Amino acid sequence: MTVSTTLRDVIGLDGAPPALSTATLIMIDFQNTYRTGVMALPGADRALEAASRLLDRARAAGTPVVHVVNDGGEGSPYDIRAEIGRIADPAAPRDGETVVVKGFPNSFHDTDLLDVLRRLDAGPDLILAGFMTHMCVQFTAQGAFNLGYRPTVVAEACATRPLAGPDGAPIAADALHAAALTTIGDLFGLVAPRVTDLPA
Image (cartoon, helix red, strand yellow):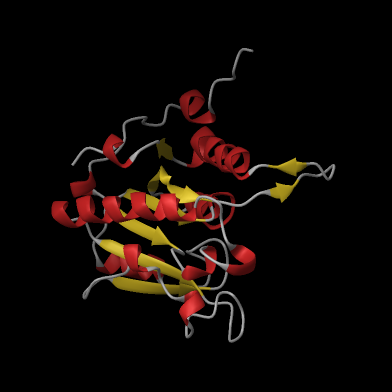
């Protein structure tokens, strides 16, 4: 099968991943929500381990780090006041790292994320990782692109869940993960398969 040229290539967008030291890292919804219960993701722990390595590299490079959490309200799997909605320990913020609270898949929608990036004097390069690939990661990448940023998603530090397709047939989590990353890579941003694919 012959694959199509990406929209990025058609319009001549840069294909080189950014260096960690010149980017800002956005960690999206690394909440306990996705480790247990109704929203548990098959690849959550594997992605969290990669996210922990990504955080270590970013902090060592002096990269600004912003954490985003989804607040679904009291009693929901996204209740940030309860253990279920807290950021998982492997991706937990350190003192001085900003936490942005959101209520929509696009982390820029109705939040102060854009103001935070401006206060950090962030350049155009954003590195994204988090849960879920097909939802908040994909729509945050699109939101960043629409605002003129250059997002790069670290694939191994993301995960999603299996869902039923339009015809009712199951779509495996890995397939949905790949489809979301392919959508991002067609236009909205770059995809780095592994943490080590990002230069320091």
